Length: 64
Image 1 (cartoon, rainbow, N blue to C red):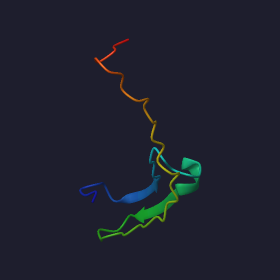
Image 2: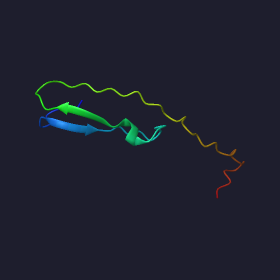
Image 3: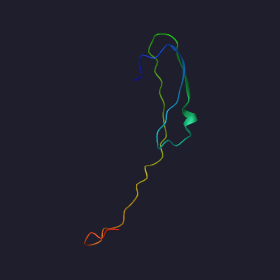
Image 4: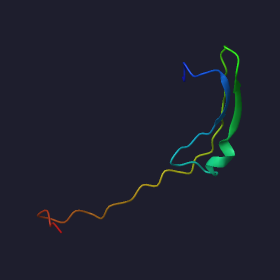
């Protein structure tokens, strides 16, 4: 929740590190020029999380 902003029109964008589309596609014009609550909702498609597999540990700790 964002509160105590001066009443006016805003451009709001959403970003997430796994966002499937470009950040510009999340852009919304929000009219908060009146003193009232304004709800804005996004449905985001996220890329699958990439997990790096590590090699098996060697006996004795085998550092680098």
